[in-house]
Length: 181
Image (cartoon, rainbow, N blue to C red; front, side, top):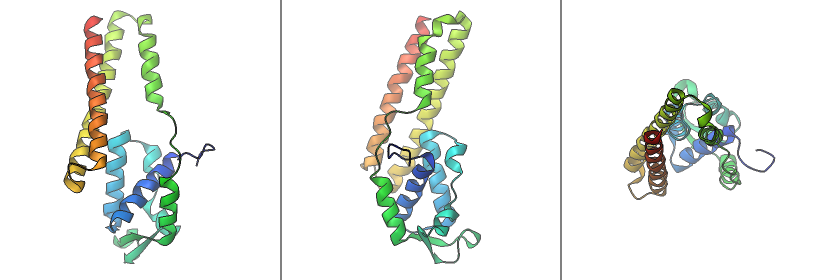
């Protein structure tokens, strides 16, 4: 954990994996695919998030092979008692205040946009619009898969609806702003 008792990216992936396996036993390949799908839909592709091995969880005793050995035979995995304690620690960690670097970069670009030539301004706004469109597509995809798994009234689906409405609002603002340039 960071010094302020908030999760590192590696621990966030660990929370995702342990939470999924605590919900129901999964095969190694299913768990790896589910973790990759969930984290990449929230954050986008990230090497920092993809570096955590599910096999390491087994080696550390956080998950156990119910049948088979692990990655080599796509074993069915379940959470261990040690894993349950680790999951509880991760779930109860503090949240880091809005630390998303991309929000800072976007605000700085908008703040200093007038320092660019008119064509470059439009290009930067187009890049921001493209980024929001991409983020929206990832969240909508995640919402769709979770609504099928957990039902349309799950807490995660409601949260994703909230986030997509914020992104819809940001997209409308950027498009309106672009029209004024």
